[in-house]
Image (tube, rainbow over all chains, first blue to last red; front, side, top):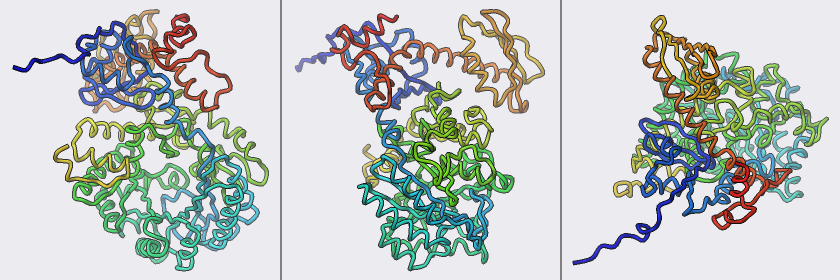
Length: 497
Length: 133
């Protein structure tokens, strides 16, 4: 008869003195969700936090071992491994290192579309005075190249930038030459509605390695309703442009973004199906931005964040079902948050950073040389609010921009660790601070969290994602991991997971 | 905590005993509930406050729900306060350590820390913390 041996741990002394490491908690369904300073999380039974504080948790339990392994507690039998925890925190804040990566150039305000939600103050297609000059472009590019970042992204947008194609040619050549001289790598993206794109332009993009980002709001009726233009053919032109761009520039160099208007709310499945029909493998379910023209037209295009959250939850379910059927499709915002939840890495997504990414990670150079902390702050300026104008390329140095009153004011409200409502929030490591959003929507850069659309959206999305994580459906988790890692989804393994 | 008189169907008065829930924790609860309730806080003494919560959308609430919500939130914030009290110094040192090595701090954090061997050192973080306490 075989003899049974206890594992060696059975004979060890039980820890007598349990010490806590910093963490925050919230309640999800009937559980407590504990999140530590580095964003590692653990679902625990209700009462766990109280038990930890009372030092009454069974130190031989699996729960205690999990808490120890995930650095919520340590005791005299273990090391706190604080260096490791500090390294994880530093990795999460990687966006603070190296300076500004994303540089957005508004080469013209002209546009032939008349979208109600347009985030810029567009001008008619013939008004050349709203184009960027070569002198302004030169100075903006020089400032961009002064960034200590070794890898830069230059995004060229409008208005409709293809209306200023000669300027695009000039800027691409100038920026690439300057980057090569400074030993920096440079990604260039043109954000365009593609309505006016020609094969000549696309051939230029291919030769210069320029990527194309466009808008696709959903099926034809919705897209054309959201994005009116003469001839009511915006959708047809976008689809035609996408297909030609893929053929000439390359499939992987063409991406699309959608904006959710009130007209979109009941059509989330149709919108997603349109992305699948057009052979996209990612979609970003984005709420409308409360800036620029969107504020003027909000009665037509706006909605409550709660309504958007329902749109998001339905959409995510549909996307998961599409993945289950074998077609890989990621939801971009979900993927960003899942990476924050499950990996120690920083995502580089400007809107979910603390300290906030505006100014620090992105600068916007307007057609007239004004420099803004983000595209959203430029949109505010187009509506007459210059709160976040950092300076002008012709008058200010890079140091001047970062030391400007506008920048300092922004930095003051940029850390969610120090904001009312955020400082105690379990989701703090996954979330960000968005002073510009709160200034635009609440007239206060610090913001009032209980009524903040930014907070409601992120709390709602994270509640939903943690609910799915807690359910731990094997297929859903496999889909999530394929999104996080970028590896192909292998559904056949789900059954035995 | 104790619930006092119930007013007009969708408002409640709650007495808060500050020996159980601090003023700070209570004010954090009031902050979060301010979206759905008009909150009126009256300090009765060093150890007691009274909070009146009136629903902004009366049709959405019954008094028992309001009472439960307020009490649950108070207890959670009291727990958070305790966790913070027990961990704030470690947290400060962790953040200082994390960012000191990135070169973004002008002043280096005092003390060193890392593992159990480090803990035993005379100048280790845990000794420093113990001396402070």
